[in-house]
Image (cartoon, rainbow, N blue to C red; front, side):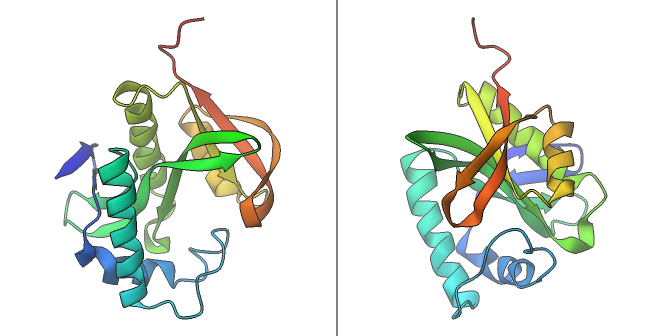
Length: 176
């Protein structure tokens, strides 16, 4: 079932059947360069386990999460995008996260998917602020964040990634 459709994409909930496609995407070193290391035992079965945990934890508990990014023209899974809860300093933030398979880079798919997810975060889920954590050398991801209306706020320590750029967007419907 689609969460949202754009001109070229469908964002939908993951299924366990997506494990093979995600395994293919996640094992491409260039695609994953700024995403952190995969477990040593990473396999299709391990990915299926992670998908199952995400489905149970996010979709059931929160009603949102990361979603599969599907090309409308041929129904191919080309990445993931969505909203996830992340710890930051003394609290928690909602992050818009996006990852597109390398074969589909430089076509605007990340911006299209991330823009749709950001809009959903504000309009459907009524989040007041959404962030993106971006590796300082990941200039392509920073361009996506800026293209969808996010702005660099500051550098922060983020989990095991070390210092990353924090980009933020505030709900345009927020009352001052």
